[in-house]
Length: 140
Length: 172
Image 1 (spheres, each protein chain N blue to C red):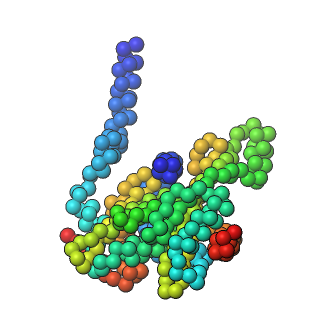
Image 2: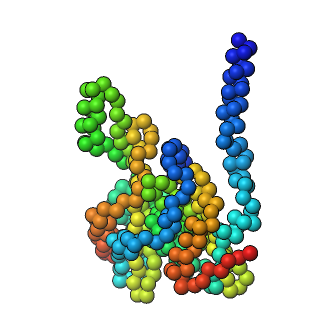
């Protein structure tokens, strides 16, 4: 009886360790540095018009196939979901940087994983540049 | 909250056996994006964005949607509804399968989501609507997660919207 219990215990421990992160690791998602994440998710635009920028972000997201879920002018945020046999959820925030610039930050999750690569964000900012007729500056 | 739950459930089902990295073109403008935009957009000769938005809300109610979010300052209204997804074809197949002694799960229900965005352009206001849906089968699994692209749906929506704007302008 004790042997079986031990075997079960060993099995369950094994199951816990193979490829599974703990809940706190999942919650904090801190396997990539905070500075790096911000740098790949953020660009600065030379405009101070928050409303127009947000409206352009919304239009760009729609062009990319997103359905807008919610938006808030005061907070400067927009969230949307793209369903194309996968689920891609993205939040974009716009906030002032000094008097003449706005910082635009996007973060996305693909199905159940955070998007941590630089390329998808670069693609998004490329599309946003075309829509705003402004250059997206890298922020350090 | 319901929306987040939907996404979570959807995501968990998609995880199994699927590619887990984001497709390269997911955030790249496609060649069809302009065509899709034209299909989903109409312009109305008014600068009164708030009036358009309240007409939009009226149409959504006409269509049985419940509003979930709105931000009039940015011209955004979102709504959703839950409907049956049972379809005859699948039922026939399932009945045949049952006669052979196997159980086949069939589509059961769907959540349809609508999102409307207005955009002032000069003397006009443009309205863009997008629809998407998630379908669950009789075992509670997600079988479809897709954008709805049928031109008929968009034409139907804008016909209703034109009517709604007319009705509200005349206070009927």
